[in-house]
Length: 617
Image (tube, rainbow, N blue to C red; front, side, top):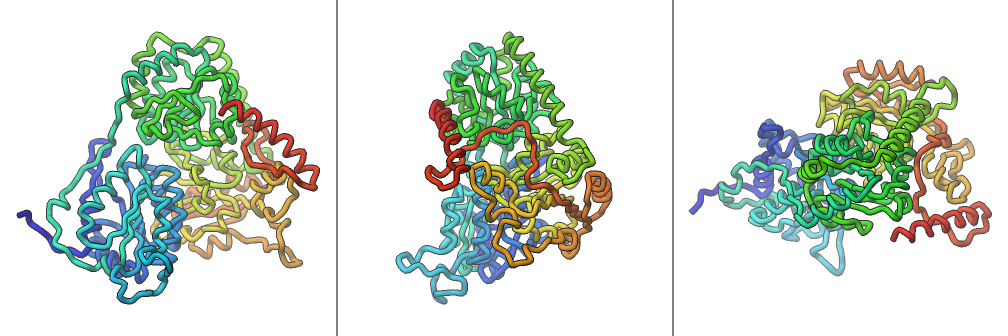
């Protein structure tokens, strides 16, 4: 009979987490870098006690908002290419449901996070307990069931011994290249405190390594045939290239074969911005250079991308006559857009392709066309981001100032609104993790918390958070957390007095300005207040200032980099002026019937684009 150790269920969860290791560059490291926790009656006596016992070995971080702390955990794992992760715990009821939005962010972006929400009593003795949701038709249902559609794996632990089968499955999902994403273990507060004699071997250390899937020989042969038959290939670099650590393999292949590359939001940084084959970003918020090549290419090689609507221009941007080869570790993604699938690890596959294509490269005309497009786009970015010393300030000029202030291995973080489009087109980085965008779920409020998580993952990098006034007002509490924990971030707030991005989309669809910019909202006679973001940030413990020109912004950024604590800079920007070049159509449905002529005109344009879209289905 094996030796046992008597632990509460919560103590067993923590002990098992601490036994999980990962090999990083030959060094064995903890898989879980810490636990974010906001305690309440659903987790303070169980998990709280268990975490206290190991606080010197496994850090517990106290946040100010449950959704925000989960965003920080997501950003941490993303910055480290999913090789290390964090757990998040909150109390039963509203504390845990606050994390559901973040779980969706992790799910869409395929990022590992272990959610440990407290739950109501499994014994039902004090039923209904404070914060319990009573469902008349199903007494087994609690608010934590909201996690089911946004989790890759979900379990409710109603007996301590259930951990013996549940935790290994949780780790399988968290570390799997294909199924990777959020795991939720719902922990009833009474079961957290119940003890069980667990076998000691259950807590033996386990070292996890990235599993690399080999390709099918037939699929490899077909891929080579497709590539060799092409003259004008374009490779789309997705986030999977980062997670596979395939950066060198990508560089070697596209350099050898002279294949131009377009980067998705998640793939940006896969090549240095000035690499000869990096044409810039692709898609709705893409570079004119890359989008033009996509419309003319005869073969698209998609690597590690989901080919979402922003990448494909809602299925209207890519040449409909082009072949599509999709290299992806997930078969689910590999067949999208009727692609020829090559289901395999990106690093292994790109290296294999290079060895088989030593005598092949794209056509000379295509190489010349690519370099002319790249040169023209580089010149446009130079001009768009230059300090023109004019008012009103614009987002592109602000992006340029922050980019110039950033060092070689510094990081920019953003998530929602108009800034992701400007950043994808205009931000330049040579650092593979220098560009951190949450644009799978495009969650407003991710930015500041995500910046904190990125800084925790890369403490030697300066982290610049670029955020609009709308997202700042939604979720800014982790500025205080960054000061409290000593993880300095630089936050640049671009105040355009509302949701400028959606205002522009509203007008593009024929609508009048309504309920987006604060001037177009229902307000008191005096209008919406002008928020003093600098004063607000100062009240949270950060250094801060407001600037009124790009010259002032550049000087403030110098002071921000010298500051020992988080620094917030705010400036007013024009909600209407954005990059004129680049970009592509995006499918946002326009009403078929409207009394507004502008809407009817927008509908006519929409129907013309839908005809193009149908040709690609």
